[in-house]
Length: 325
Image (cartoon, rainbow, N blue to C red; front, side, top):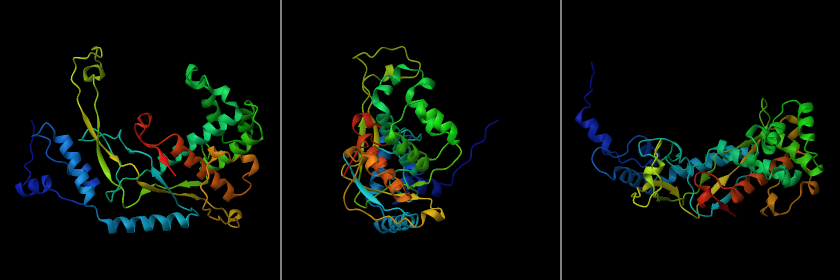
């Protein structure tokens, strides 16, 4: 036996005609009726973009002001980078519109702190591997995952016990720079059972940020279907897939705080106006991270390097998600 629940006409009308200024609310809860048009998913994304275009700027300014005050209270000094081209956050999220997007609950795009931390950690891992001798890690794809040198390095850096870390990391015959970076890595990102001392905040955009309607156009839709045995043939018709992306030239604000024990309170961060990056030639041996501020500064270098060199979000292999100074 099945039951159906009738929705009052007034409620149904209010639902389908929602005109909120919160693009995230439209995206997650008030998408257009998908039952009528073949282009309804595209129309839904257009509605989301239209909602974002009429966003509440004053709400956004108040949100960013609170973000800045919170970051500063954690000892962070926010910095700003600009998207080199378009940026997609949360493309893999599932929903009624087929493709995902990450909105803050106030309706603005943002980059979660967990993603920011993961990017900085990957860049740091690659830098340590480079310092240990890049040739050791060139055949990474040919090795089994559990035996891959980069995987072994990551496991060594994540060891809780200092003795086990020294033994596992020592197998790579590290030089002075690599040892200094490894110790900083463990402090910044933590180990398996111990939290890191760095606090990676969500990245927030400027109020001039804009959204674009973008498109993917798979030319062999039958070939890509799960379980399909159809070859990629030219007689298949492309099926465009629309998605949202942050426009190029959008400013994003980043911040890395620090969990300060009493012994770290005496170190005060002095903000510099000069942009700096690990990949621009500054060697750790020249500025060994002897205190909390220097290690926090190194965390920022690693994050900045990841944003400029690796990219963040979806479709980075196609040029999305990269930043510039």
